[in-house]
Length: 283
Image (cartoon, helix red, strand yellow):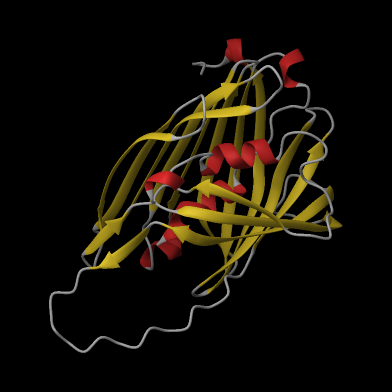
Protein backbone atom coordinates (compact mmCIF):
# COMPACT_ATOMS: atom_id res chain seq x y z
CA UNK A 1 0.00 0.00 0.00
CA UNK A 2 2.61 2.56 1.03
CA UNK A 3 4.47 2.18 -2.28
CA UNK A 4 1.65 4.08 -3.95
CA UNK A 5 2.53 7.03 -1.71
CA UNK A 6 6.23 6.86 -2.51
CA UNK A 7 6.91 6.07 -6.13
CA UNK A 8 5.98 9.47 -7.56
CA UNK A 9 7.38 11.85 -4.98
CA UNK A 10 10.62 9.93 -4.82
CA UNK A 11 11.28 10.59 -8.51
CA UNK A 12 9.41 13.60 -9.80
CA UNK A 13 10.96 16.29 -7.64
CA UNK A 14 13.70 18.73 -8.43
CA UNK A 15 15.72 21.22 -6.45
CA UNK A 16 15.33 24.90 -5.88
CA UNK A 17 17.95 26.92 -7.73
CA UNK A 18 21.11 27.34 -5.67
CA UNK A 19 21.23 30.78 -4.03
CA UNK A 20 17.50 30.91 -4.79
CA UNK A 21 16.84 34.01 -2.73
CA UNK A 22 18.86 36.06 -5.22
CA UNK A 23 17.00 34.72 -8.25
CA UNK A 24 13.75 35.55 -9.97
CA UNK A 25 10.66 33.52 -9.13
CA UNK A 26 10.05 30.64 -11.51
CA UNK A 27 7.36 28.34 -12.80
CA UNK A 28 8.92 24.98 -13.75
CA UNK A 29 7.02 22.31 -15.67
CA UNK A 30 8.41 18.80 -16.21
CA UNK A 31 6.89 15.94 -18.20
CA UNK A 32 8.02 12.32 -17.89
CA UNK A 33 7.09 9.16 -19.77
CA UNK A 34 6.94 5.78 -18.04
CA UNK A 35 7.78 2.61 -19.97
CA UNK A 36 7.08 -1.02 -19.11
CA UNK A 37 8.14 -3.84 -21.43
CA UNK A 38 8.71 -1.35 -24.24
CA UNK A 39 5.22 0.20 -23.95
CA UNK A 40 4.40 3.71 -22.76
CA UNK A 41 2.14 3.22 -19.74
CA UNK A 42 1.84 6.73 -18.34
CA UNK A 43 2.73 10.40 -18.60
CA UNK A 44 3.66 12.18 -15.42
CA UNK A 45 3.36 15.93 -14.94
CA UNK A 46 5.26 17.92 -12.30
CA UNK A 47 4.81 21.63 -11.72
CA UNK A 48 6.66 23.89 -9.28
CA UNK A 49 6.00 27.54 -8.43
CA UNK A 50 9.06 28.89 -6.61
CA UNK A 51 9.62 32.33 -5.11
CA UNK A 52 12.17 33.67 -2.65
CA UNK A 53 9.59 33.23 0.14
CA UNK A 54 7.59 30.07 -0.59
CA UNK A 55 7.11 27.03 -2.77
CA UNK A 56 4.33 24.88 -4.19
CA UNK A 57 4.87 21.59 -6.02
CA UNK A 58 2.28 19.41 -7.68
CA UNK A 59 2.60 15.96 -9.29
CA UNK A 60 -0.02 13.94 -11.18
CA UNK A 61 -0.24 10.84 -13.32
CA UNK A 62 -2.65 8.26 -14.66
CA UNK A 63 -1.88 4.72 -15.87
CA UNK A 64 -2.93 4.33 -19.51
CA UNK A 65 -2.63 1.91 -22.41
CA UNK A 66 -1.84 -1.76 -21.90
CA UNK A 67 -0.95 -1.30 -18.23
CA UNK A 68 -4.48 -0.10 -17.44
CA UNK A 69 -5.62 -3.72 -17.83
CA UNK A 70 -3.70 -4.48 -14.63
CA UNK A 71 -4.08 -1.13 -12.88
CA UNK A 72 -6.05 2.00 -13.79
CA UNK A 73 -4.51 3.98 -10.95
CA UNK A 74 -4.33 7.77 -10.97
CA UNK A 75 -2.68 9.90 -8.32
CA UNK A 76 -2.21 13.56 -7.37
CA UNK A 77 0.15 14.99 -4.75
CA UNK A 78 0.85 18.58 -3.72
CA UNK A 79 2.98 20.29 -1.08
CA UNK A 80 3.19 23.94 -0.04
CA UNK A 81 5.54 25.68 2.36
CA UNK A 82 7.76 28.63 3.21
CA UNK A 83 11.44 29.29 2.53
CA UNK A 84 13.32 30.89 5.43
CA UNK A 85 16.06 33.49 5.14
CA UNK A 86 18.79 30.82 5.29
CA UNK A 87 17.10 28.72 2.58
CA UNK A 88 15.55 26.16 4.95
CA UNK A 89 12.21 24.76 3.76
CA UNK A 90 9.29 24.97 6.20
CA UNK A 91 6.42 22.62 5.19
CA UNK A 92 2.85 23.86 5.71
CA UNK A 93 0.57 21.56 3.69
CA UNK A 94 0.76 18.11 2.10
CA UNK A 95 -2.14 16.58 0.13
CA UNK A 96 -2.09 13.16 -1.49
CA UNK A 97 -4.89 11.22 -3.20
CA UNK A 98 -5.22 8.21 -5.50
CA UNK A 99 -7.87 6.01 -7.09
CA UNK A 100 -7.67 2.57 -8.68
CA UNK A 101 -10.67 0.47 -9.66
CA UNK A 102 -13.08 0.70 -6.68
CA UNK A 103 -10.40 1.67 -4.17
CA UNK A 104 -9.13 5.10 -3.16
CA UNK A 105 -7.36 7.09 -0.45
CA UNK A 106 -7.03 10.75 0.44
CA UNK A 107 -4.70 12.33 2.98
CA UNK A 108 -4.46 16.02 3.93
CA UNK A 109 -1.85 17.08 6.50
CA UNK A 110 -1.17 20.55 7.94
CA UNK A 111 2.05 21.41 9.79
CA UNK A 112 3.08 23.91 12.46
CA UNK A 113 5.62 26.27 10.88
CA UNK A 114 7.41 26.66 14.22
CA UNK A 115 8.38 23.06 14.96
CA UNK A 116 7.09 20.88 12.08
CA UNK A 117 4.47 19.11 14.24
CA UNK A 118 1.40 17.82 12.41
CA UNK A 119 -1.49 20.09 13.44
CA UNK A 120 -4.18 18.12 11.60
CA UNK A 121 -4.43 15.00 9.46
CA UNK A 122 -7.73 14.45 7.62
CA UNK A 123 -8.01 11.21 5.65
CA UNK A 124 -10.37 8.80 3.99
CA UNK A 125 -9.85 5.45 2.30
CA UNK A 126 -11.56 2.41 0.81
CA UNK A 127 -9.71 -0.74 -0.17
CA UNK A 128 -10.74 -4.04 -1.71
CA UNK A 129 -10.30 -5.64 1.69
CA UNK A 130 -11.74 -3.79 4.68
CA UNK A 131 -9.01 -2.24 6.83
CA UNK A 132 -8.50 -0.13 9.93
CA UNK A 133 -5.88 2.63 10.09
CA UNK A 134 -3.64 2.78 13.16
CA UNK A 135 -2.21 6.33 13.23
CA UNK A 136 1.36 7.36 13.95
CA UNK A 137 1.98 7.82 17.67
CA UNK A 138 1.25 11.36 18.85
CA UNK A 139 4.83 12.09 19.91
CA UNK A 140 6.14 11.12 16.46
CA UNK A 141 3.74 13.14 14.30
CA UNK A 142 6.18 15.53 12.66
CA UNK A 143 7.20 16.57 9.16
CA UNK A 144 8.75 17.02 6.76
CA UNK A 145 6.37 15.55 4.21
CA UNK A 146 7.58 13.44 1.30
CA UNK A 147 7.76 16.22 -1.28
CA UNK A 148 9.31 18.87 0.97
CA UNK A 149 11.92 16.37 2.14
CA UNK A 150 13.13 15.64 -1.37
CA UNK A 151 13.04 19.29 -2.35
CA UNK A 152 15.27 20.13 0.62
CA UNK A 153 17.51 17.13 -0.02
CA UNK A 154 18.30 18.31 -3.52
CA UNK A 155 18.97 21.92 -2.63
CA UNK A 156 22.63 22.88 -2.74
CA UNK A 157 25.82 21.24 -3.95
CA UNK A 158 26.54 19.09 -0.90
CA UNK A 159 23.22 17.34 -0.33
CA UNK A 160 23.37 14.88 -3.23
CA UNK A 161 26.90 13.57 -3.67
CA UNK A 162 28.82 10.30 -3.82
CA UNK A 163 28.93 8.98 -0.27
CA UNK A 164 30.29 5.77 1.26
CA UNK A 165 27.53 5.69 3.90
CA UNK A 166 23.74 5.57 3.63
CA UNK A 167 21.85 8.68 4.73
CA UNK A 168 18.69 8.27 6.86
CA UNK A 169 15.78 10.63 7.55
CA UNK A 170 12.37 10.18 9.21
CA UNK A 171 9.56 11.70 7.16
CA UNK A 172 5.75 11.77 7.03
CA UNK A 173 4.58 9.85 3.98
CA UNK A 174 0.82 10.49 4.10
CA UNK A 175 -0.24 7.62 6.38
CA UNK A 176 3.08 6.33 7.69
CA UNK A 177 6.22 7.51 9.40
CA UNK A 178 9.04 6.36 7.16
CA UNK A 179 12.75 5.84 7.49
CA UNK A 180 13.95 7.13 4.12
CA UNK A 181 17.41 6.01 3.06
CA UNK A 182 19.50 7.17 0.13
CA UNK A 183 23.01 6.66 -1.17
CA UNK A 184 24.69 8.04 -4.29
CA UNK A 185 27.49 5.85 -5.60
CA UNK A 186 28.60 6.68 -9.15
CA UNK A 187 28.59 8.98 -12.17
CA UNK A 188 27.20 7.61 -15.44
CA UNK A 189 26.19 8.94 -18.84
CA UNK A 190 22.65 8.66 -20.11
CA UNK A 191 22.42 7.79 -23.81
CA UNK A 192 18.86 6.53 -24.33
CA UNK A 193 16.88 7.89 -27.29
CA UNK A 194 13.89 8.14 -24.95
CA UNK A 195 15.57 10.84 -22.86
CA UNK A 196 15.69 14.50 -23.87
CA UNK A 197 18.87 14.84 -21.79
CA UNK A 198 22.18 13.35 -22.90
CA UNK A 199 25.11 13.68 -20.56
CA UNK A 200 26.56 12.89 -17.14
CA UNK A 201 24.26 11.90 -14.26
CA UNK A 202 24.64 11.16 -10.56
CA UNK A 203 23.21 7.71 -9.76
CA UNK A 204 21.42 7.40 -6.39
CA UNK A 205 19.45 4.58 -4.77
CA UNK A 206 16.47 5.21 -2.47
CA UNK A 207 14.52 2.84 -0.22
CA UNK A 208 12.09 3.17 2.67
CA UNK A 209 10.85 1.35 5.75
CA UNK A 210 7.64 1.94 7.71
CA UNK A 211 8.48 2.64 11.36
CA UNK A 212 5.08 3.86 12.61
CA UNK A 213 1.46 3.94 11.46
CA UNK A 214 -0.17 0.97 9.71
CA UNK A 215 -3.28 -0.58 8.19
CA UNK A 216 -4.79 -3.67 9.80
CA UNK A 217 -7.12 -5.89 7.82
CA UNK A 218 -10.56 -6.25 9.40
CA UNK A 219 -11.39 -9.94 9.27
CA UNK A 220 -15.03 -10.95 8.84
CA UNK A 221 -14.56 -14.67 9.40
CA UNK A 222 -13.02 -16.93 12.01
CA UNK A 223 -10.66 -18.83 9.80
CA UNK A 224 -7.36 -19.87 11.28
CA UNK A 225 -4.93 -17.01 10.74
CA UNK A 226 -2.17 -17.65 8.24
CA UNK A 227 1.40 -17.70 9.40
CA UNK A 228 2.88 -14.28 8.63
CA UNK A 229 5.37 -14.24 5.78
CA UNK A 230 8.92 -13.16 6.40
CA UNK A 231 9.19 -9.59 5.13
CA UNK A 232 11.34 -9.16 2.04
CA UNK A 233 14.09 -6.59 1.94
CA UNK A 234 12.74 -3.71 -0.19
CA UNK A 235 14.44 -3.23 -3.55
CA UNK A 236 15.71 0.31 -4.03
CA UNK A 237 14.42 2.84 -6.52
CA UNK A 238 17.29 4.08 -8.67
CA UNK A 239 17.26 7.74 -9.75
CA UNK A 240 19.69 9.52 -12.07
CA UNK A 241 20.15 13.26 -11.47
CA UNK A 242 21.56 15.77 -13.96
CA UNK A 243 22.92 19.20 -13.08
CA UNK A 244 21.46 21.72 -15.54
CA UNK A 245 24.05 24.52 -15.56
CA UNK A 246 21.87 27.00 -17.45
CA UNK A 247 19.13 26.61 -14.80
CA UNK A 248 21.47 25.89 -11.86
CA UNK A 249 19.20 23.07 -10.67
CA UNK A 250 19.46 19.32 -10.21
CA UNK A 251 16.84 17.46 -12.23
CA UNK A 252 15.94 13.74 -12.14
CA UNK A 253 16.19 12.64 -15.77
CA UNK A 254 15.78 8.86 -15.37
CA UNK A 255 14.50 6.38 -12.79
CA UNK A 256 13.78 2.67 -12.59
CA UNK A 257 11.97 0.53 -10.05
CA UNK A 258 10.70 -3.06 -9.91
CA UNK A 259 7.00 -3.97 -9.90
CA UNK A 260 5.21 -7.31 -9.79
CA UNK A 261 5.56 -7.82 -13.55
CA UNK A 262 9.05 -6.58 -14.29
CA UNK A 263 10.59 -3.11 -14.16
CA UNK A 264 9.27 0.36 -14.93
CA UNK A 265 11.64 2.92 -16.49
CA UNK A 266 10.96 6.65 -16.54
CA UNK A 267 12.52 9.33 -18.72
CA UNK A 268 12.35 13.10 -18.77
CA UNK A 269 10.56 14.00 -22.02
CA UNK A 270 9.96 17.77 -21.72
CA UNK A 271 10.98 20.69 -19.50
CA UNK A 272 9.83 24.32 -19.42
CA UNK A 273 11.04 27.17 -17.19
CA UNK A 274 9.17 30.50 -17.09
CA UNK A 275 9.33 33.63 -14.93
CA UNK A 276 6.50 33.44 -12.43
CA UNK A 277 4.84 36.60 -13.80
CA UNK A 278 4.22 34.66 -17.03
CA UNK A 279 2.59 31.81 -15.19
CA UNK A 280 -1.15 31.56 -14.72
CA UNK A 281 -0.85 31.53 -10.93
CA UNK A 282 1.62 31.94 -8.09
CA UNK A 283 2.12 30.15 -4.76
